[in-house]
Image (cartoon, rainbow, N blue to C red):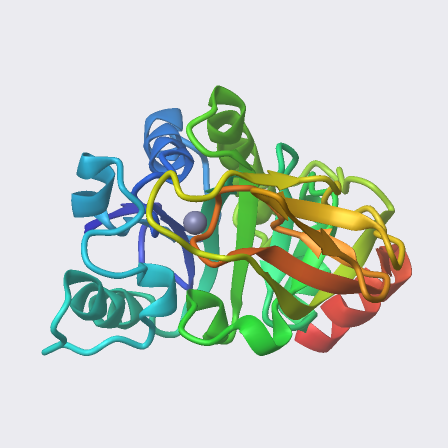
Length: 277
Ligand SMILES: [Zn+2]
């Protein structure tokens, strides 16, 4: 784990990249922030989490770090020990954690629930949606209060790395660590909540050919086919919004079915920001 800092003093804000080793955008953003010589008004901790997995360009070494929290200092796996170490490093801090996906090219934010941090910071971010992970937060860093995750784009893409850097500067403006020049972004962001997994048959590599036939964040009507595995089709038994839906992103699920629970607009954001103060 690599830990760096911008500015002087004890940081109350942290940016974390490289939770997953096959998502280089976070590490690139951290390096970019270090190179940029930003004039921060609050100190910021910068962390590259799973350097071992990044070196191998694999999601993890022994288990998924983002399912291993809170971890254990004497854990059996590299990620269990690292999860514990990372939480110690992030104690008491407001955290922005950078990811990328195989499912969607545009950035979106994830939060355990739409807490004051998410509501006040998201309006600064160029994201298309906010997703509440709700019942699917188990073992993720997002379980910890005051963590906002962001999916920056497609894994390994140049645009994901550029988005990651931009989102970091927007996050820093949102928490008052960088001058925001009064530029809030869009006025309305849809808020989705994960409701259930969309399972797929898991087999040995090559056994199944998967295909997804629905677009993320776009309503799937009851009775329509949203995915295929070889000759088997998967039909929506009720309407839903797909989130993190991809053919090969996960081993045993296509992704998640979500509901649209509201929209985050300027008014809601200000209300929540006031709560936070
Ligand atoms: Zn990730």
